[in-house]
Image (cartoon, rainbow, N blue to C red; front, side, top):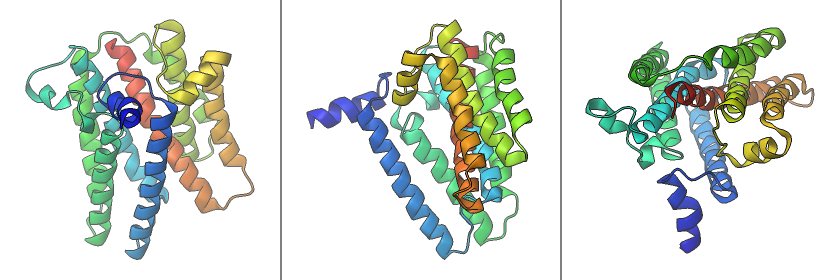
Length: 257
């Protein structure tokens, strides 16, 4: 129980960096849930992680990144009162709760849309939630100087290396995550909380981490040993995870938290 308290529970309710134990646990839980949801969708005749589903998920990734940045701003006293009382540092507003909450909402809406032929339901709600949280984050923004270098580092490889919207989204998402980490750690005095990123950046520098994020997507794109469906699933997860984390990092930078 002491081990669980120290390495799993305490980091959820504090600002401690991730450790190898909770990282591995969250990854295992995520893989199990993805497997179970894929089987449920298949039984209902719904394609899992095809291009349509990935496109519908992207606004939810942005929504999640913005919400997490707002939680950081509330924790640091940059935002508070009124609606911001719902963004305090609680289980459902940080990892792993925020992933369960937003992924659960998205999967429920997408399932509902396909079961009852409610075309556009998921995308409309996702875009609305992302826009709402952009407006909620806006009052805490105090600097825009990180925006140009981060977006250049994210957009340029996506535009020049991606051949269609899914490849562009995957490269952009991972490059955004890598670029915000590089800019934040090298120029603004931030630290890295994730285990693997910290190991790479701490030994070889965070610009290499940025390059590796792009390289991983390129390997997926060029990998001849996998089927088209499997490639799209990997690119989809790269886009969604990179975009969510990258948006959070970018807005933390602009909020100064």
